Image 1 (tube, rainbow, N blue to C red):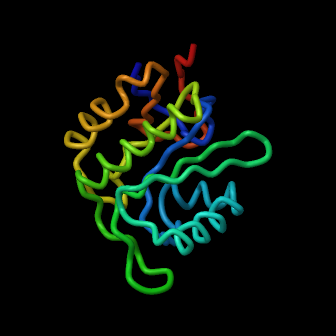
Image 2 (image 1 turned 180 degrees about the vertical axis):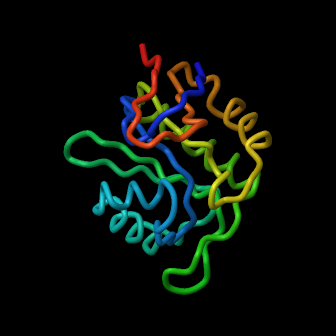
Amino acid sequence: MIQQVSGDILLSKAQVIAHGVAPKDPMNQGLALSLHEKYPAMHKDFHHWCAQHNAQAGEAWMWGSTNSVRVVNLLTQEGGNGHAAHPGRATLKHVRDSLKSLARIAKKEAFKSIALPRLATGVGGMDWKEVLPVIEEQLGDLGIPIVIYSEFHAGQAAKENLG
């Protein structure tokens, strides 16, 4: 079940937050920056994973904290060149491939719910009208609540239907 809501994804009650990044992303813009600030260990672990696994656009990587927080980094964009380089633009292929990876992780980990922003439309530069159908195609059959934060309102909890 996919639902679109307005609010602050950082206040989501979903079990997992997924967001788009690039390999070796400095996470210094948008939602990635907010997640980096809220979970600095996630940012450090992400860079370690990227270096160890030669991360490529189209993959997904899940980070989990000791208090059951789960963040899935969807590699929707090409990486920038050099240390702290800005990420490239997202592509439909990378969005589709990273969402396929998210679906596999969700099944393996038995996720109960996932929250997503307007994936790949901020720093990624894509048109939401192109991205939404791919989300519906890749995640619509998971049988769990998928909450898309289509409008951002800082500090405002959304009315999520997670049950």
